[in-house]
Structures are given as C-alpha cells and as structure tokens.
Image 1 (cartoon, rainbow, N blue to C red):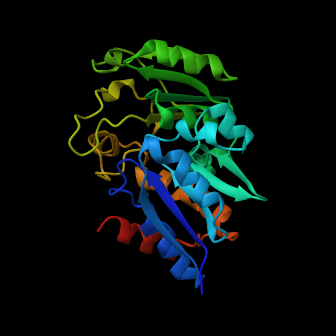
Image 2 (cartoon, helix red, strand yellow; image 1 turned 180 degrees about the horizontal axis):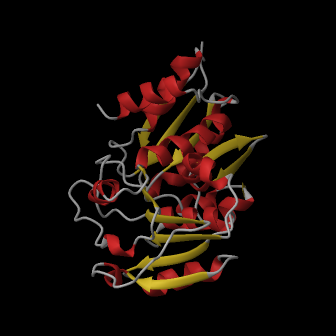
Length: 284
C-alpha cells in the first residue's frame, strides 16, 4: 500500500528542518503521509519534476535555495502572489498541472497577526536584504500598508525591488546603519515599526548584521529570519534594549503551515501546546 508524500528540494538540503515540522504535524494529526528531503541539482530539475508529475502519490514539494526562481519556467502556472514576488517555494500538482505558490510572505506575517489587526496612523518597515526572502517579505508588508525602507549592500538591487512595490519605498545603503544615529525619535505614538533581517548575516558562521540600535524606532518589533542560531546577535541586543522580538522559527513554521494545507488538504495543529512541542524538537 502506498501513502501520499511530499518533500523539500534544494542544493544543499541536509540542513533543512522542514521534514521535522511536517513529520511532527502528520504524527500529531494521525494522518497517513510522509515528508522527506531530496537533494536535487539544478541540471536535474526538469527530470525530477517530470517524474514527480507522473506519480499519483506525490502531493508536492517545498523549494529552497537555489531553485526558487529556476523552477518557474518548469511550471504550468503560478499563483498571483508568487508571480509578483518572482519566486516559488511550494509546488503542488493540481488537476494534472504543476502550480507554483509562495508561502514565505504569509508565513512571515503569521506571527504578526496581533499587531496587524490593530489600526495605526503609520506603518513603517526597515528590511535588511534584497534576496528571495527580502522580496517575499517586502511584497507581504506592502500589502499590509507599510512604507518600506529597503537596505542592502547592493542599492541597485534594492531600487529594482522598490520599483515593484505598490507602496511608499525608500532605499538606503547597509553601511549607513552601522554607526550611531544622532536623532530624537520622540514617543512611538500611534505607529507600527518593524526592523527585519532578511539577510544571512547573524547566521552561524557569519558576522552579525551591522546595525546600531540607535536606528531602531522606540517600540519597534525586531524580526530576524535567521533561525540558526535562534537568538542572533541582533535579537539579543534588541531584546536587552526592551524591543519585542520575533525569531526565525516563527517564519519557518508559518510558511510550512500554509504548505502543509496545500500538500495534505488539512490545517496543521495551531494550539499552543503543539507549537511549544514543535519548537522543542526544532531546537534540540
């Protein structure tokens, strides 16, 4: 007897925590199904998708680096949000067609549901990075009414992304944020400020993100997409300074929750007990 299965593909792929997440949810719900990781080289993508397309037990795959853009040409259609972002992280077979989705944007927003449900006179996000994660985050926040400051070493890439966004945008060089800022922010007032690290800086083996905390508005939520380590230097400094923080596991779990629905046709467990147990597994 065969069971439905999904997987995550990438190069490299050994580091992926996605099988732990989906496997935990499958066990928790008592569903027949499996989720694994598969090493796929760029040259093998066409053959891989052709084989999976013909497999009736295959429910789809998540896509990680470096394939999020390369798979687009091999799909039959894209969800509108994935088309706007220009990257796919979830592929699902639907009525014989392969459809590309991007769950990164919604996954990023999931842990911000509380603040986003409130009304604000002004919403501003400072996003560090111009790669695939930054693209998804910027498009997601633009849809939530944020004015966005895109920050990166490559200001040309930041400007190109800014031109795609239907919101107020600004571009700034990364090195500007390394030095102390002489500025009186005053009271936070009726506003929502986010500071987001969408780069690999702060990841294990990488230098920290070079941002001086004087650049953070009072009460700004500091959100780091890096999850190894879970407490990056940016989050440790921000937490010590009294800022609310969101770690990278929140986005990882959020985007996986949406993909799980696509793959297995049901909602992943969302109760506090399940989330706590899952985080314990992911941080062992």
